[in-house]
Length: 320
Image 1: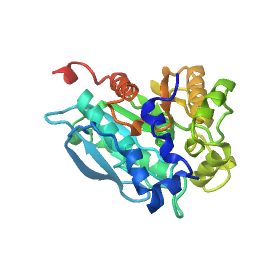
Image 2: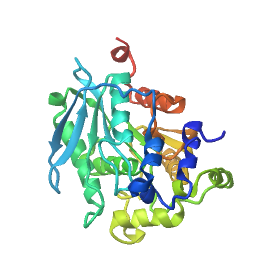
Image 3: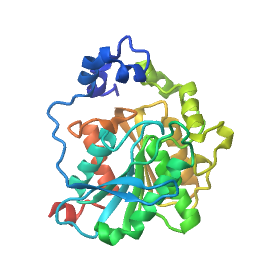
Image 4: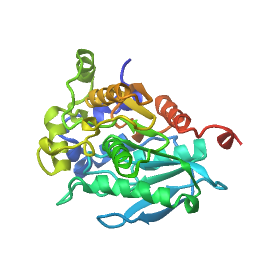
């Protein structure tokens, strides 16, 4: 299927742009950037939020808590945004819109983690440690957070999916604990991305180069995260290297048009071989980062419903 017009219809705004950094930082491109990011007709759901901090080995980890009104002992999703380990924040749509949509649709508490980014001297394991600390804090404070301690799920998108999976492995090994579910959206599980199939390589020719993830770019991202070569990677940094037995039920969401899709597909296959209850979904017409699009776009809305279903949140609580 062709790329969804919500994405493809904006490709012309990228003409002549050499990189995403140029596109988002060059003042001369402000009008094009505004047109690229605007989504008229989408009203972000109103959900009560508050900030808190989880204690961590590198200092406090800020978290934003999204909690619908009149809720108690609710399922919870601890969520990590993407951004190649070096960008992104709690206000990006992939974090904020995602949390608001799930809290509204499913009647759950969503806790979005503001982990430290790999800029300056920060490298692995700092973001990983932040996420593990945040999940432990949620478990320890479930009652005061209005969370059902037996229904805490972990998830993330892109680099955030990597951090979610790595934290799940660490919590199995050190705490003998697993979340109710692991949710991975176009996640990166490999330090070196497996090669694409011939069919994916053909599909990716329809994507503008500035939106691609060629091997040199993914290697830079991995090395920046690790603070060294990929030979330094372990199963907590890149979960495809871990023993996967005993992990919780996992939902893997892969974008159809994504250079990183082979990582998600191979990780799902590894989970299945390890006996993990895993479901893999290829989201047709979508590109990497599709959770930054509004829920008025049908494939995005379908994914949000699928995530809510997967964490067991849609039921009497959500319908009453």
